[in-house]
Image (cartoon, rainbow over all chains, first blue to last red; front, side, top):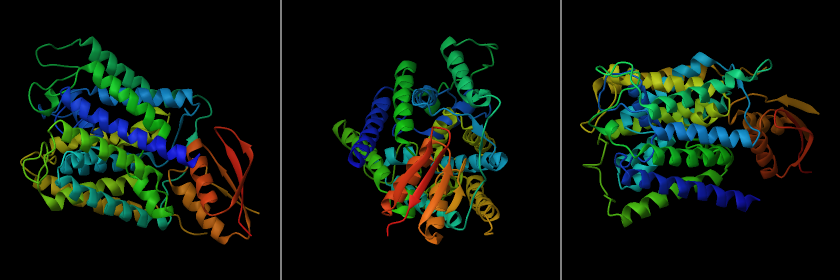
Length: 360
Length: 71
């Protein structure tokens, strides 16, 4: 059984890696076949929550991922409406998780994809991510706990809200109707920049469906694997990371897209300190929230309303990042972004300390 | 026998609580939890410690597990 599970995890990793490179060949921005943070940011823009007109699109990958995870949970009888664990704190942690990701320019999944493309800045990011996870574990070991979520007893309705919103967005995207043709809306679409670069809807949606289904089955979490390795020596999830890296690396090499180095990497900058600290903050937030950005999407689709609030926090964090000029670009980080990351690390550390369970 | 309740807790707190309680317990520990993910994780952890695992109730929403430490 143990072996079968490990093979499955490696298979899931390889599949995600292959689809990530495939999506780039079909039109996604380079080294951005999947990026939960970038895509949620694009969606925040697509909904008009921020005004950065180069990053506005309702990403079908996110919609597909959620629907796929919902399908897997539903078929596996794992859908369960639950919630009520320090909801506002989770929202805030979602905000800072996004601020960290947008200073680095990617979630942990894109970090792996960037490494597979030869982007050495992402190796610096990975180091920050792992140290951030260790910093999160420091609080876990001291009894950090946001409290128990409760199952909904009267109705399962709350658990379906997330997936219904996702289906609604898919409807709007496919229907393509506009209330205000001049100014745009309800959805907004970039005409240039990363937001304008995307694979066709059906391909992106299909890739998302597959990844969501597999991620739910595998309990894939980009922070959980490192966390459990450090906590209890579990190595299984690391195979999934290996799978992603190998698939992306080999395919990029075969397609002549592998480009080793720090300089001139697509949608990346070379500020080592804030590549490190940006993903440090993401790692810390992911451990305190119980999962990385991808895992939060999957949990939301399973009826976990606390995770759905963390996702809303990430969407709000994306809007805040752009409205406060905190998000980095290829040109580098901004002072506001650097302040945001440092503030995030301090605030999350304070919360980590405040929410420790005092021994009876 | 000591009992701990890990229902509704985020990953990986159920495993950490089990680890802590097992270290203190005399030989048997009862864990009440919810959801498949924490069930799998607590089971995996207990087995990795050489413990025996039995379920007195086991359904997707709630489970009760008895963990027996190796002699």
